[in-house]
Image 1 (tube, rainbow, N blue to C red):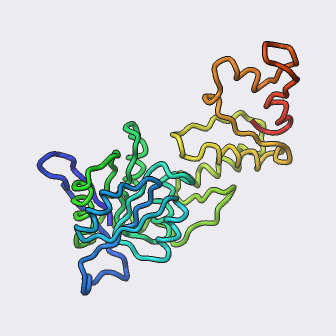
Image 2 (cartoon, rainbow, N blue to C red):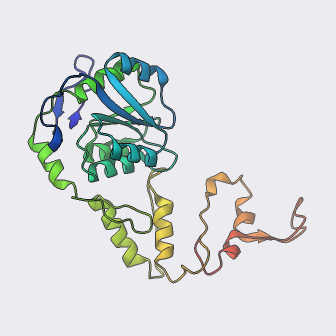
Image 3 (tube, rainbow, N blue to C red):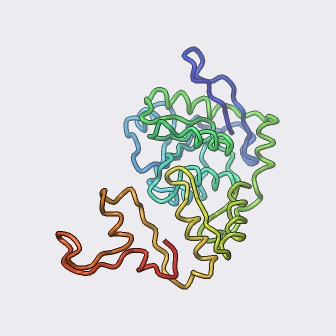
Length: 271
């Protein structure tokens, strides 16, 4: 089930689009308890307690992989997914849930107030809502109530269902490409990897730029040599040069011995 949320003061939910699970088209029997999986390494316990009072049974997972494992073993009525997880990007988790046949609505949370592109992509993947953290417990409970309301089929949800592959594709270069956009990235890796063309990879933090860079390395003639991923912004000003190119003993105060630069360490490989 997917929904569109209007954040206006008078109407927290403007329009709701939904799609029932094939096996759950009948009404709930015997209980009004709705089961929620919250995938986040920092779960708000106050929110969890309030959700319990509001009739939600909340399970928690601290990583994307453990959340996916829980989702495969238990049916959930809704998901809460943090964008920045320790092991993978939150939208990757959402994409895999959809690819594995989940029709439960998902609320995506982020602690960053500039994730406009991620919000657009999240809604394209079928997220019911996208909110900034921290989120008030009452607001969260109200949102989940609307998200898990009685489902009804719509043309939009039917299009979304048709867009979901029947099965999850096998990962290539440790990348599971479900969406057409990611499949085109892997096609690009196939074309560019064997060449000596320069490649520029851009994207938000956590979207997998290093994975794509490593995929290019593994698909190139340099794959038998070293691959080094470095974060230039992590180096103090003035130290990047010596980190990249190394230095000789005595070149400056504190240089007590020769040091190989990263470019030399990765000779014939990829930095």
